[in-house]
Image 1 (cartoon, rainbow, N blue to C red):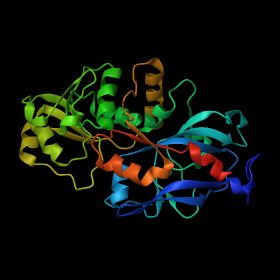
Image 2: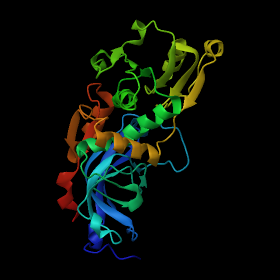
Image 3: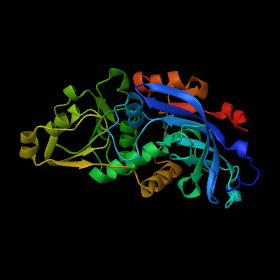
Image 4: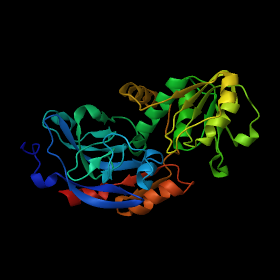
Length: 325
């Protein structure tokens, strides 16, 4: 068995983490971490973000089954923290990094594994955040998701859904040089645009949108999007759907609409996002609306999933670091 990294003891390789059991069962539990390899980083997490898409499905137990998925699991793919150990790259010790998930727990799956006080992650997966905002950088994975969706379907002139991802898709469209899109939102409390128009879909009589990006997660939005698409238009599914997506064939047939699916973001997407943020073309202002300490994780996750006023919840792990030494 490998020795702990230089300067660490075996008992330092423990962490407290959020654990999902399914069916809305959430707890904070302690875990032993896997022994780091030579090029692994040990990171003390400052903040982790809560995803209201995939993580909500994991929490409710509605996530469709796929390989490697089982409970108990540690969620989270949005973490920012400080490197505290690395044998191969000691120059990184003390640097602030973004980590898009980790699979480093004995006794639980890391899916996606970043919602913990301490994580072990391969060096190649971490992004050094020199000069970038810290807590807002928990949004980098979601911004990369928005970037990927925009590239798959083209710069949208209509975005369906004005949650955090929908706002990022709209901002991304303009950051990449596109015109300000129209955004649909059914919640009147989320109709605040940021340089673009937001309206209820029932108030929009336009039927010639050439590129539509749905990030609502609502399967009913597919038919509505097709009804408002131009002939030969593209509808990109950029959200994640618990139910089986379907659509009425005749309207799609008559308009020869193309349906596309935007899958997981790539390292190239993340690299592009970092460049846009560094240049000032893209910002994350106003997206993180709530921050709660890890001790309140249960209520924080429930609020993130159930309170429409909560755009993005961040969990603060900083008070937990002394407990893992």
